[in-house]
Length: 83
Image 1 (cartoon, one colour):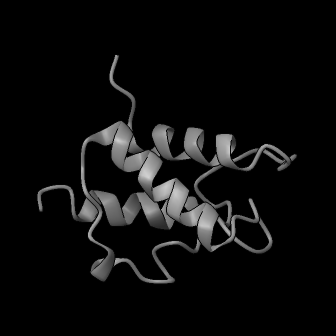
Image 2 (cartoon, rainbow, N blue to C red):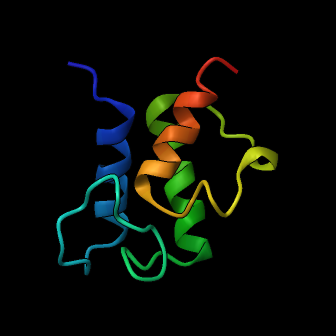
């Protein structure tokens, strides 16, 4: 069974933020006030998702808003799925 982008993103954040004690959902902030991933953690998150999906996330299209929450990242990936 193929996992959705949402499932892959949540799994990746869970792996990279093992100290996060709450439930991870699409509304969970990736950085401050949520999973607390710093800039290196965000880079690791993107590389992990790229490896799992076989897609390249072009950094010139990534904004702070795209990385504000897991849901924002998933929405960005779904919008750019075909290119």
